[in-house]
Every structure is written in structure tokens, then in C-alpha cells.
Image (cartoon, rainbow, N blue to C red; front, top):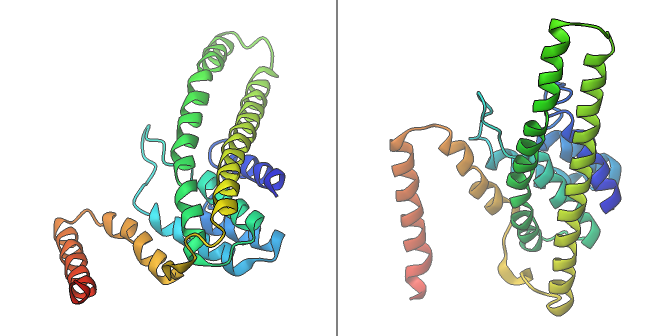
Length: 224
């Protein structure tokens, strides 16, 4: 499953920069294809909905590199399938543990862009003296191959570390997190804060904070 996950992540990461085809890199599309490959449509799409909502606020513009959504989504899907998880209370921690991969993927992508400076200079020299018509194509293929390999390798290392960590935790505490009673509705409401933050309205933030405080008072004061 980890082998399949790293392959699909490396493939879908190319839709982010090397080959742009609409929305193929979005978590919902990733979740749909993972569900089709594993037969676990419900859990796969539920996880995809969480990531889609959570990063709704982050829009690529200019030189800003948004989080690598496919890395976090594929990691959560692969680990959930590997451990056979079906309870949102346990899947929640797999999701949270996978989220840093989105920022790690951004760092890897930034590093790859810096490495392309040499190709950019070679292309400028070629534009002044186009002695070979194959140079642009060769540069593009080399860039895609480098991105594919780095995505494959970095994702493999990150997921294996998470897999090993969860194996140790689940072996030591088999029922850990099961009693929390978290549902997918709770996770989606928490993830929808990304959409609220996208509004860029202070009044919306105040209303949100007020609602959270009132809910906390209503929920916990009777038990104090």
C-alpha cells in the first residue's frame, strides 16, 4: 500500500507544476481515485473533504507556493488503508500527523525550483543561439524526471516514518483514541474554518470566536 501511495503521489504531484490539467491535484479528486483503487470510497472521500475544506483559504498567487495538498492527502489515505482504520477518532490523528507533509512538500518544491536555475540559464543561452532544437524538450523532461523522483523518494521516507511511529503507538495502546467519540461532522466543522478564514472579514472572525466561547461554556460549565 505504501508503494502504491508513493507512486500515485509522485504521479499526481506532476499535475501541480509540470502538467496542469484542471483540478486533478485537488484532495477530492485524489480521494475519488484512491477510493476507486481500494474500494473504500466512503472513508477516502471523507478524508479528502477534510483536506479540501481545511486549505480552502490558501490560494496560489505570484511566487507563493501553496501547501502540497496531495502529500498530506495521500499520506492520510495510505496510512488509513494500511492500518484498516474506520473510526474517525483514530483517523483524526492520522490526518493531523500527515498535515506537516503539506509544508514539507512545499519546501521540496521550492528546492527543486532553485535547482532549475541552471536550466533557465541554459534556455536563455539557447534562445540567443538556438543550435539544437532538442534542448528545450530535454530540459523539460529532465525537470519532470527530477520532480518525479524527488516526490517519490521524499514521500516514501515521510510515510515510512509515520507508519513506523503509528505501528509502535497502536501496538502499545491498541484502543488509543477510540473512546473520544469524534465523528466526521466534528472534523468537517473544524476543517471548515479554512473557508471562514478565506472571507478576510474581521467581523466573521469575531463571530467565530464568540460562537466557540459560547459553545465551550455551554459544553463544559455544567460539568465543572
